[in-house]
Amino acid sequence: MEFELMASMMCADYSNLGKEVRDLENGGIDSFHIDIMDGRYVQNFAMSLNDLRCIRKLTDKPLDVHLMVEHPINTIDLFIKELREGDTIYIHPEAEYHPSTTLQKVINAGITPGIALNPGTSVDNSKMLLTIVKKVLVMSVNPGNAGQMFLPYIREKYEELLAIREEKHFDIYWDGACGLDKIQQYAPMGVKGFVLGTTLLFGKDKPYKETLEEIKKMEF
Image 1 (cartoon, rainbow, N blue to C red):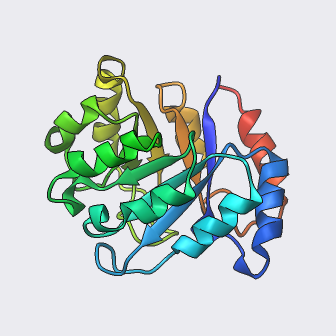
Image 2 (cartoon, rainbow, N blue to C red):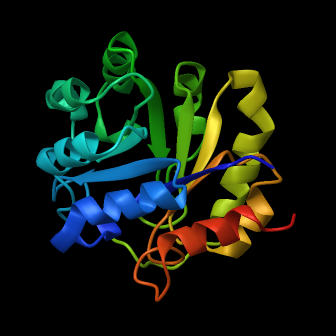
């Protein structure tokens, strides 16, 4: 069974970021998830444009840029400039007055367009956008901080999206509190990829390669 594993780089050790990227890449990670936070849309500051630039120079793997910022239309060009074909930008629909306009800028630049849905954001509120995006990042925790608990009521949202993903031609990705049990349950259902943070990948007493190999060898 094929599914993608993305490293949540806000959880990485920034005292040696180059080694972190190399170890993850050598361990078999599929892409690098970049959380950009402005301290307004969420009550935290995380990664920056300079962090993105640094990681982009360190790897040829795809980057998944998750913009947790107010009115991303104002800064989207800064991020597009640093990316290449195969990379993704996610925006939160409720953070923008006209999210389709922002997504069209992403599409025009040849970057993969995506939306991120907060726990409190319904699928119905974003249904029109599902016709133009290629990826939907479902937040299984409230955005802004690592190490949060999984919110069980999100299961209904996954089921709703899985039922329409083929009709609308988008893929579904998991973000937040992702353990082995979540991958084992949701990968066979059709969730395409999983963002790995402190629950499973970072801050553990074993190499990234060992953890990633264990995940890929799981039986379903």
